[in-house]
Length: 255
Ligand code: HEM
Image (tube, rainbow, N blue to C red):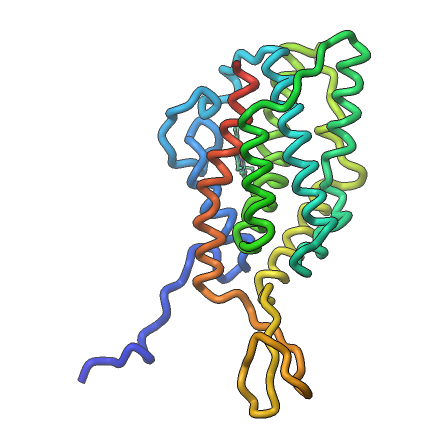
């Protein structure tokens, strides 16, 4: 007699035992190239996928990158502030916010006599996309939120150092400075991400007949359930789009 599916061990996802952030990290690390990070597996196709050590940044390109980054962080931070889905509210005031710091950096460049360009197409396209998914696809939005803030704390800082060395006499911009201990701020956000992926973004109610329903019948009470495996997979699958959009913006530095 063969074992029934109910008795078969369920498929385990890489990182699952440590929590959902570890799953997101695993997917993200594979989407780096070997030249970007040692856990990377992707083949180099675009200039920004080469080792940062070999980059030849330009100041005009870097300003475009900073302007588009300001637009992206402005968009992410207003979405979180507005909290269309209650889980977004968990990510208010994490200490990772970048909008104000970027705005100060751009002011500094202006004072130095640089002309600040308007946002370009990679930033505008990404901001539009983020607004759209934030309204109807919280799992996808959370994926972009995680990747954007965590990428900046890792590869972003390597890029900041490189550009400072080549173009800014080693001046460290505010974009790369955090109030407080960055690793602690990141850990707090990891804990919150693990928490929200354990509660559903869709409120569910238990009716008097004990069935789960979406709309609120009288005398029901509110319960949440953790993200389903499908919702988690959907979030993980969004990582590729996050790399695509962020890559388009990073490439501006080399233009
Ligand atoms: C982590 C480099 C672009 C998302 C890392 C790490 C490195 C790195 C070295 C490992 C950090 C560690 O474990 O200590 C780079 C470089 C990039 C780049 C050089 C481009 C030039 C991106 C992009 C994304 C991304 C475009 C997604 C939008 C992440 C994430 C982590 C990470 C989510 C995990 C951070 C953590 O666990 O704290 N990156 N990366 N990276 N990167 Fe990138």
